Length: 93
Image 1 (cartoon, helix red, strand yellow):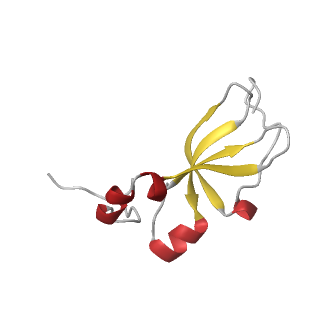
Image 2: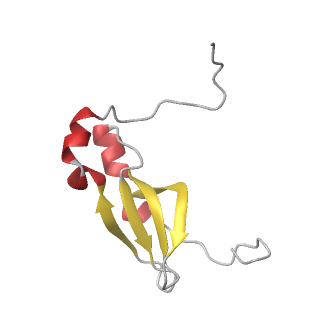
């Protein structure tokens, strides 16, 4: 997206087995570093937001930088997996 809010490029993460979350930043080379969900892990293990990926803005190539299951294996033993929350759910206090 440019400074006017116009979309100037799109990148396909689905073919690389990832679904983007809303958290991302640009590195010093202009690549997109993003929190993502491995589609395979979501399907098999019910985990979401379990990877950090890099998207090359020059080539569109998607590569995995961090797999949180490998980085924090003890925490994964305690994790409940798929987040089942919604902004539309009524809450009681």
